[in-house]
Length: 153
Image (cartoon, rainbow, N blue to C red; front, side, top):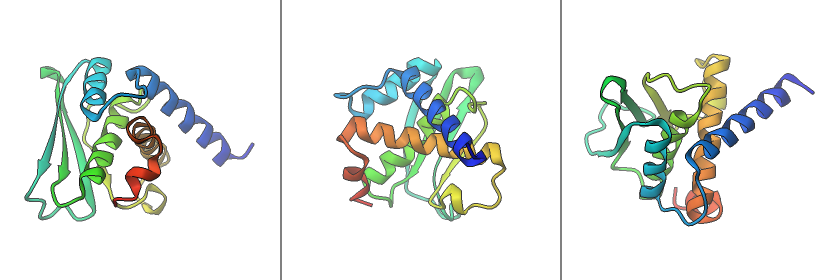
């Protein structure tokens, strides 16, 4: 097994644990998924659609967590198509559910693929892949296959 194979096994295992942690299953809508994540991580969440995103660059979403208040917010760009905003928010939900990564710090979803971002450390790269895998799993819950959601991007 190569180092890359080993990393992808860890990513898949972490994504499996994340989805199981929230109890995600077919028939849930996006609000159900957000509520399931809230319950799994014991915080109240709000998804905020931001109109003024000047200065965001390639950033398509970010998560803030206020651990002392047990609250968090996911911010996405209003200018993105609705399904892409939902996917960006799902990526951030993946960070929350990833037991090996969630630390209450700012996490960002950029339109730049983790494969194309040389600034990421190996653990950060792996964490971005986990969040991306969780987002695709959420898309499957919502739409049966991620390709349905991706077709609107």
